[in-house]
Image (cartoon, rainbow, N blue to C red):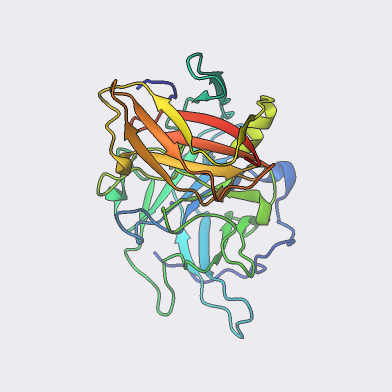
Amino acid sequence: MIRGLRTSLSILAAMLVPAAGFGQALDAPGDLQQVVISEVAWAGTRASSAHEWIELRSLATEPIDLAEWTLRWRPSHIGAEEAEPWFELPLSGRLAASEPDGPIEFREDEDQPGTWWVFWDLDWRDDFLLIVRGTDSSILHTPADLVYDAVTPIDATSGLDDSGAEMELIDPRGRLIDRVSTGAGGWAAGESEWSGSMERTDPHEPDSERAWHTNLGLVRVEMDAWGNLIHGTPKHENSPVFAEAVAAEDIGPTSAPMGEPILVRFDPLPEWPADERMWRVVVTRPPLDEVLEAEWSLIEADDGAILVEVAVNRLPLNEEIHIWARTPSGDVLFAPFLFYPY
């Protein structure tokens, strides 16, 4: 469980199914779609870009046996004369009946008006299936349901191409149940710079460019093989589009003049060392959590408090922006601003 506020997926012959792509009808659409591809960590982890993982999620009201299901993928190269061969992975295991996602709660900091602590509860769940490449040590403390990459077919690769891929989930009857497709710009989401995973925003919505978002490293679960925080939610509920959660709470921004940096205070706690490697500060622009370039640093105050200083000179004027600060213990403080000319 993670809480805010100072608390601490043998080789098979290729199946003859349609190639995936945006706009293609699934063979089991709507209420017949019982399993979806929920998260794709195509960038791996900070420990290794080869430590890729994929997460499936149940949408069914009863448990699902994944025996004789297949997940397959291949690099996606726009304009290529010949398609790459599929890497096909036979699935196994069971998915529990689907569980509802929990809410996110914002509580204003009484000592720091205009800032909100962010609460959520994330528990390990059996309605998710975790598929890991290479080794079960890629994600500490969260055992994989399936580890692959023992054998690779000739001219096919189990690795997820950083420039994009198409991925298909096939049921025992050979029906295309779900897919992930990439367009001219590559993967719809995910980030190699901080190894952010690509998460399904709404599991009931069909695949499209807007059906995915990048894990920003604010809601994250477990550690990688080197003990770095994983910017993803393997085997757990996906992170939200934070701007949508803010809008639902009708939280308005604080107006401030452009010029002086923003200071956000954190009272001293032993688990909050002033080590920038252990903190994460992200500045985003709604409504899609667009990450903006912004410089930030930590300052130790005379009373032991830690101040997060965010430079605002590169941020837009007269537009709402969101500042998110995650402490080493995973607590997240949120502050919305609207800057006007100084």
